[in-house]
Amino acid sequence: MDESLFFAGVVVSLTGVSLFFFGAFGPVVVGLVLLVAGLASSGSSEEQSEREDGPKGNCPSCGARNAAARESCHYCDEPL
Ligand SMILES: [Zn+2]
Image 1 (cartoon, protein in one colour):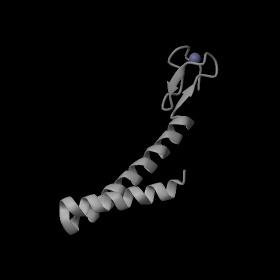
Image 2 (tube, protein in one colour):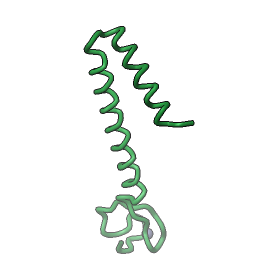
Image 3 (cartoon, protein in one colour):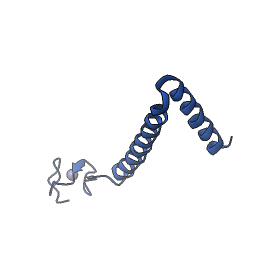
Image 4 (spheres, helix red, strand yellow):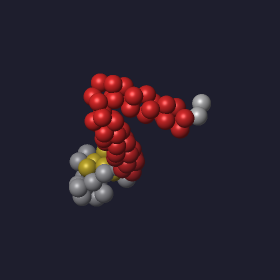
């Protein structure tokens, strides 16, 4: 499937539907919604990669999860 063609079809369909329901202002609303959706999805993927790198570290001694702000393991008191 060609995703860009599919996406263009979705956009054109949404534009037509929005014109029908909201008049000339409809495509503006659809455009803003798509912009916000795109921003939100790119933001969440960034957030996810940040989560993978992790603000939390595992204790080198016992492997317990610790907040990055901690200087010693909450479980075994090993310095992190
Ligand atoms: Zn530990």
